[in-house]
Length: 168
Length: 277
Image 1 (spheres, rainbow over the protein chains, first blue to last red):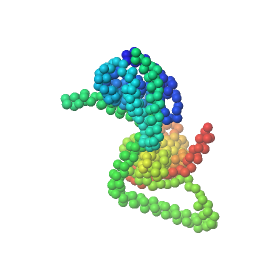
Image 2: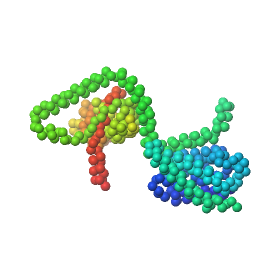
Image 3: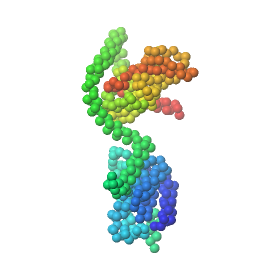
């Protein structure tokens, strides 16, 4: 993904998140966070500490907008941290070497595996950070699952509309 | 040294990650009210357990003085009983018993032991060994046998944190017993034995030795609980006096406390909330 395209996706995703999805009230069981897709589609060669700071400040920015100081930042920092490892895990070595800076994103099976794990991890931290206790654990678990499913649905929607067709 | 730098360079990704997560966590705890309350509950119960062990040992060394105080308090209570008995001899009609049995009490007292305390900072706190399981809630009054101690600020399951009179954040409404003028009592952060009663009009006659009690104007403290005695009176501003009060409670020596629950607090607050709308 080229840098200009990335910046455009970055702005569109933030705009969708802040103007539409943050204003959708779904009984506090579902938090739809599409903006984490920004971290998933960062240029693949990015492996050093930059990605951590990027994740942290992205989360902090959302926190400032939602008045949830620190919760999003903790979650985005974690998915930024596991990103390089996860990329290694979900695709084999040759593929990674092959796609340095290129279009890896059009492989749906790989992409789905990757966002499933990442989004689940993100929501675990987000919901636990918000609940901040292990009482009512079943409800917390339900909220994590609901939020993960909802977020993945919207991420895939965006993927099929804006990212997938770039294969050719 | 070289090895350490090598190690840091090797794991810099993880180290930065941990630092950022730590930063996020402190942001969560510092800036979100709910999370801060939960967190201080956890720390309160941890440090509460720790200091209760220390206090258990420490209490043995104060058994003698504590005993003396209890005896003195017992004597007072016995005297009260005798007075009441005498009163009942005078009014020995059966119906008075009926009325007395059906009377609801305004305040319920619970005893608690202190497990941790401070008196050398400007923001001191006391921890006691009773919590939500014993019915302790926030904003309950706390007294010792000698006088007012403070207000419950935070509660965990088995412990409660008290904001004592010797914390500059606490303001308590106090009254000069002999003439009923009231002002706000606030500590200046200096000497744990003295506090200051402000906002008393300059024409009020207050002399060293006068008694200062709670005014009963808030929903927290019962009326006429002893706070302390006037030490000296200063005219600082043109219109108001500042009265130096020697606190009745010796914060360095208390160990047994009473937590006081106002059973009609909610009723009063609801009524006032309706009237304010």
